[in-house]
Image (cartoon, rainbow, N blue to C red; front, side, top):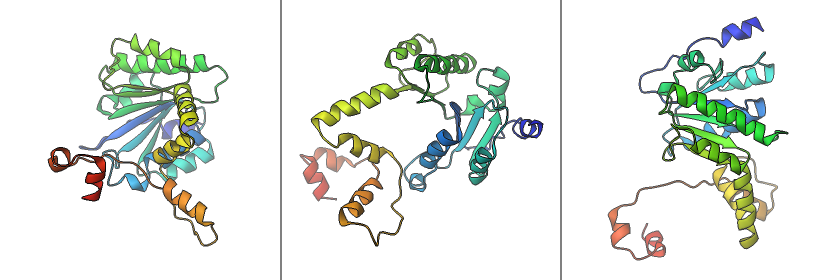
Length: 241
């Protein structure tokens, strides 16, 4: 345990021009494996300004188990782990939070006490904002009514900070799926980063088509003024590309 403490007790060495995001909150092997699978996906290389950003995991653990250590070693060039807490200004200085591109606070979706889980993450937001009011924060909340507490934080910025309410998203997708069957599945496939790389020799045609579609993503692109001023509708723009 002492060796782990020493191993993860240093300061983050930031290279000039290097971006990094800080991740804290509910840190487990499963939550980080899922996050890193999306954040470090190869498809982000040409489409995302964070494609080469480091990921700093900030968490206070008594021990870092072998499974979690294996995850860190698998992504050692991009992912750094710090035995620290965002509730301590000394630790916030260690991880150079004032230079971070964003701070992500993850929630435990299976928490027995959702309001208690939200309260813990709101306290993390307060601690970070007290230390660095301009920090860009993306926080997960379980209950919609707890969003109002974030609005009462003086440094909370509705233009840059984001509160993602899991219950609100789920209910919204369910409601939309009642009007448009399959909508929730389509949205889930669009926003999840997947690669259809497995052998498709023995797959049914419908399964091949579905997995092919699930491996596609949605990106933003800036169009020239020609598409804006000279074409009347989307069909014309699509046919002229």
